[in-house]
Length: 78
Image 1 (cartoon, one colour):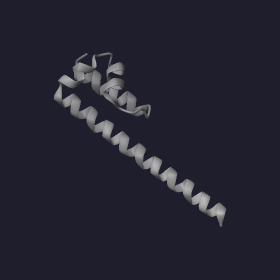
Image 2 (cartoon, helix red, strand yellow):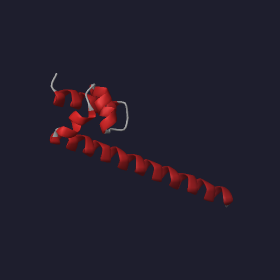
Image 3 (cartoon, one colour):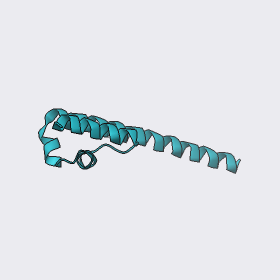
Image 4 (cartoon, one colour):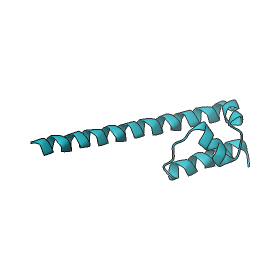
């Protein structure tokens, strides 16, 4: 299988499992070297895109959770 196809499959597998997408995880999943991922600009951009997307989603989820916790504490005090 070509590197790009292995990489795409690895990213899909990580996304389906709600796992963070980063170079280490993709390399392990695709069974290729991290340096290979970094050496292919399209692959590097794809991983960076999904890594950023996961980070922002997690950050938003954490923020929502914090807001809900604060709201509950405020209600309990009143």
